[in-house]
Length: 374
Image 1 (cartoon, rainbow, N blue to C red):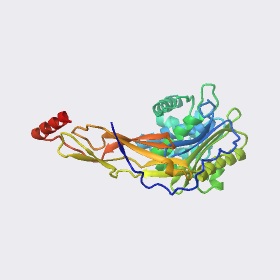
Image 2 (image 1 turned 90 degrees about the vertical axis):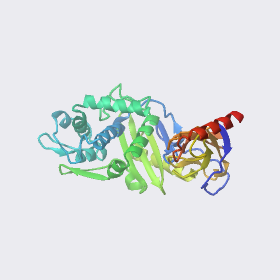
Image 3 (image 1 turned 120 degrees about the vertical axis):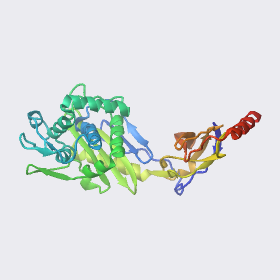
């Protein structure tokens, strides 16, 4: 590839030249916080160690259920018959009953807001016929997402020696849930309370009451797992995600998660380098009906840096040379390489924003000669 300089666009104003401070001391066994607008992890502690995920398991249960809704295998108003197995589920419950049909929408709210194990089993049976088959679907999705240290044995998060995950995998799972199902995420995960069977239960995520920018995501607790919370906050269009495993109490997990989110927002900036689907550079095309092609990016290019250090960003455009026709719209034709203070932040695919057809026989012959002379 041929390297060419590219000016950074839309940089935030440079502030004080101070590196981000150390993250706050956190009460928990494992934790991490990242910026979903850029995809960058800001800090992590023991994020690759396996732990019991408890009810954080329900995030994958929800992901598979949302897939089934998207694929029209089930519908929100569909009536679900409650099995005795679902009715007898131990642990947290939404109190569904046999011979009393419940809708898929109600079950999702019972799973998300009330963390009902009975709701999870009923949904699993509605989607896959049996919880065991549903769990196979969960593990298949985990493999597809690249969750290398995750294995599910049930749809609820009830303890099992072979049921485990990591903060890093749960971060990837949650970011995928928010990215792939934004409508469903917004519809269910910010709900503070749900009443079913004349029993009202509050969402256990205390941050929904303490921080108006928090709109999810999920709590979990068992004796072995401790108190866990995955929290997402959207401030000014910038979304941070914090994962905390193994804290000491309900109040502590909320307090520590709030500290992680506040730290990320206070000491880091998200910098948009270039918006999606706008031309960055015209690249020469050989043997094509046109002599060049407009190039850009499929999505916004955003990076996260410590506040005041935007001026330390550098970007280099590496374009494919020679680029031969035909060129399809969306075809990768180069790479944007972004560094901060000399350290690589990311590499982003540069794509053609328009197609370029093959030239006629004389045009191809002429460019063949030009390439040979070059």
